[in-house]
Image 1 (tube, rainbow, N blue to C red):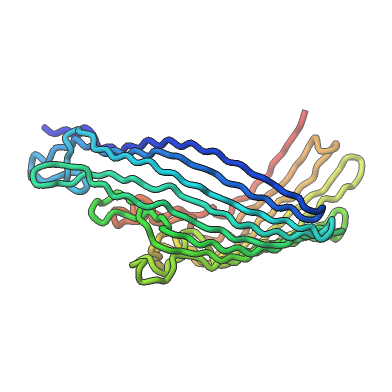
Image 2: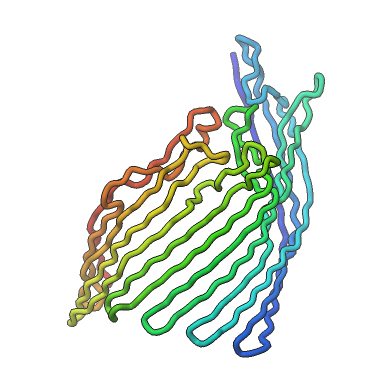
Length: 340
């Protein structure tokens, strides 16, 4: 006695892009680069439903309760953008150089189409989201001398109309894109590797990020939220052994330790949809023979069987019942390789 035929969201995007770079080298030590990317894009969105009301109660059976009876409601818009970038590189010597960059980035505007009632008529409900603009500033130093290689960089990103995806409060199970307003990102990252012997290398890296939606009342309930999946601190370290015994035999091993501080899975942040800091230990080691033609190796990931989440919220969160994706538990095995 009842059939539901269609529920569709449609989209068609066309984009044309052209870019150019010019580099000027006024001295052997200095390189200056300027570039630009030009964009022209057309974005079209559509929405249609053909889901009659319930035969038993007469109530709407679709999110928002608006049925277009199979009629496609569409909206279309054309956008242009110019995205410049500038880069400077200075070589103090063959071992050391410094760099600085400024660039403009963009996430395309969003043309969203739903349906709403205007009296007895069903018309398009268009809610556009402005383009997201980011200005990126970065500088750093890179070093490679003898057994040591290292780098240190600092970056700052300033966003306008930062786009986030949130559950639609009026339509369970439906996600919409909204502008969180202004946002920023300040980060420092570094890495170091030292060859203590021709067969033994130690390495490590770290990253610190202070970023998220600006704590401005104009940003509403998203103000002060950290970016999704972005830890404040992360670091890793380990060593590599690659020792030749002779006669085509070689022993290799790479144990590592990684750490990541608390991350949030949703914006606005919800402590119940977050993951506390996680430290993982991984390793791989083995022997190769006949000049790497044959190899046997053992590996272990998440050696101490830490329980942690990769993600939370997802589609279920749109219905008020978040789904959770666990990280890989302790996992170990043996690999045998032969090359012919």
